Image (cartoon, rainbow, N blue to C red; front, side, top):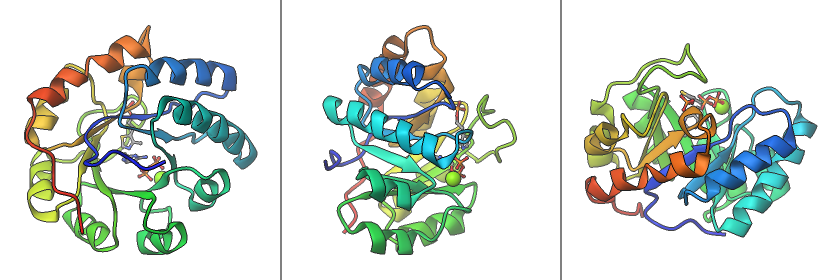
Length: 218
Ligand SMILES: Cc1ncc(COP(=O)(O)OP(=O)(O)O)c(N)n1
Ligand SMILES: Cc1ncsc1CCOP(=O)(O)O
Ligand SMILES: [Mg+2]
């Protein structure tokens, strides 16, 4: 499936949940919040376990009409026919990923706090550029922190949707959208909530108040 363009809204990223039934129940609730994108991410399971979970989460996303990208692995994205991939600095070259995945799939690139990575990611054909951690992250406490100003600069100068990640909550989300974030990538605040559907739905109001969407890259 193709993503609604421009990409703008809640971007859910799955937690490291080893029990697949538990994960699927949480993802099912979270999808009711109507995220614009979901990333399957698991840093604990082996490759076979990740493949099983990713394929099942993808089936839920398809039923909900939500595009799903896979963290770290172009191979896994191709294997399960996911909608794309998210790549960090250790996950391979975005231009090579584009050559393998073709034009229609989504490629997201981690830029951390580095402007040069964002410029290179845009040149390589990334569909969105991700910055962060914006706040202290319960999931990744050692993640480098990125300044808020990078969001607006990337939005103005690079013509790609800008994702913010790291420690985002429904309470601190508005300042990120006001600063230029198109996508808010969230793990704990939604998936650790008593009901991910209720918590996820709290993000919608933040986007209604934010700046206009970035133009689609050519
Ligand atoms: C939307 C989004 N932004 C950043 C990341 C982090 O990617 P990476 O640096 O490769 O770290 P891991 O997620 O692989 O631990 C992300 N996954 N998603
Ligand atoms: C993958 C990643 N990269 C930077 S922070 C982070 C984790 C975000 O999770 P949370 O929303 O729980 O802070
Ligand atoms: Mg990675």
